[in-house]
Image (cartoon, rainbow, N blue to C red):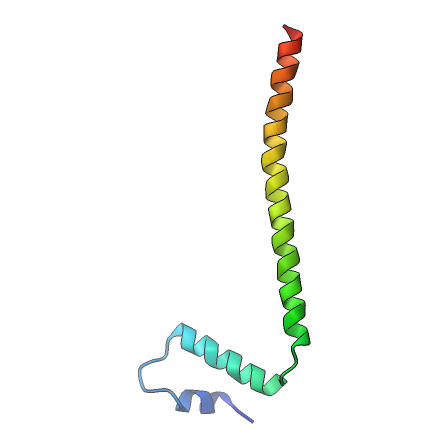
Length: 80
C-alpha cells in the first residue's frame, strides 16, 4: 500500500509545490481506490450538466433583458 511518506520520499528536497502535492495526493488516492472509471464518468456528466445549465441561465438572462427592452419600445410606440 502506498502511503504519503512514500510519495514524499521520491521528490527532491525543496521542490514541494501545490501542484506536485495535489498530483501526488491524486496518484495515491487512485492507487488506494483502484482503477474504476465509473465514478470519473459520473463526475464528468455532472460537470457537463452544470455547464449546460449555466449556459442556459446566462442565455435566458441576456435574451430576457433584450426581449423586455423590445416589448417596452413596442408598447411605447403603440401608446403614442
